[in-house]
Amino acid sequence: MKTGNIEMGIISSVKKIHVLVDFDDGYKGILHISNVSDYFVSSLNYIFKKGAEYQFKIISVDAMNKRVKLDWKSIHPRFLRNPFSYSIKETNNEFKNLYNKTMKEINND
Image (cartoon, rainbow, N blue to C red; front, side, top):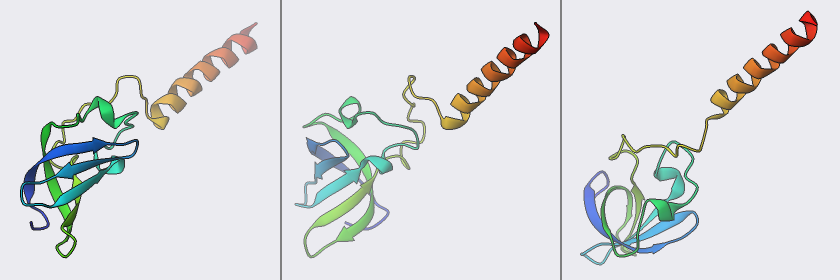
């Protein structure tokens, strides 16, 4: 395994903030939730299923212990965001618009 390579791995475990992955050559990988998407991910179980095979990018290798750190979002840039999550900027703009509308109504009365 080399840093930067894209490898196929099988999900061995899905936890709250990370996914554990097994590779054919005996390496074990960990994918942290922050390396899945730039957007909010409420549960890794919505994306990854135990026993399923996925592609991952290797971001660091510990050859002595046969462990790797993984990235998913860089090879899946079109990953859709959760439709129920909103960015802080969007939420603030909605609040700001509602506030301005309310203040105009109060001042016009």
